[in-house]
Length: 204
Image (cartoon, rainbow, N blue to C red; front, side):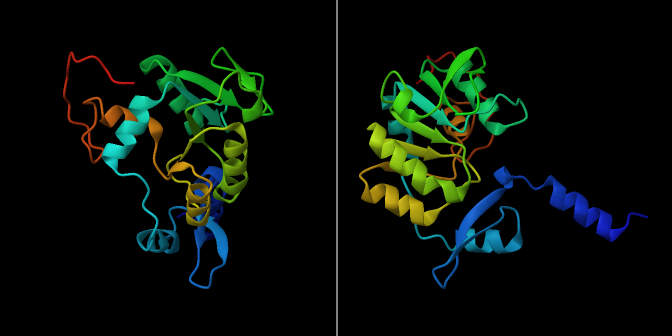
């Protein structure tokens, strides 16, 4: 029989930074908690910020020519690595990696910050903790980029409003890989696999 304490410890060990999200409480304070916790799910259902709808997100992806991934990782187990692989292999975006602690990812050079990129990216795709998003937004604004796309499972509603106040288009808690794929017939608009096979030229 498995000891309850052992199960709890194992569950706690399995929770990484990527599993945490920043939530805003009714008293105005913010805190980080496991994204799959009952309280996090409850607070998620009470969100007031919505961001661009599906058609608007499609427009963002169609217009973009370049994407910078902030928080890119060379670890194949990380979601940023999976998304980066997809963007390099399945799209014709110019993809840039930003991580001050890496030099190469998937054979591509890695830049220490957005200011070091050879061009201003159309989209900055963010893989950072929710509490880091406001500072990332400041970097995005300073770099001159117009869209910040915060990955699935990462939420900071206060930062979303802040980004919009800075003139940015903000997408949050959505996977850019999933969004791109669903607009190409591979996924239903709600995210389900349609099983559709098409010869249509893919959109960027």
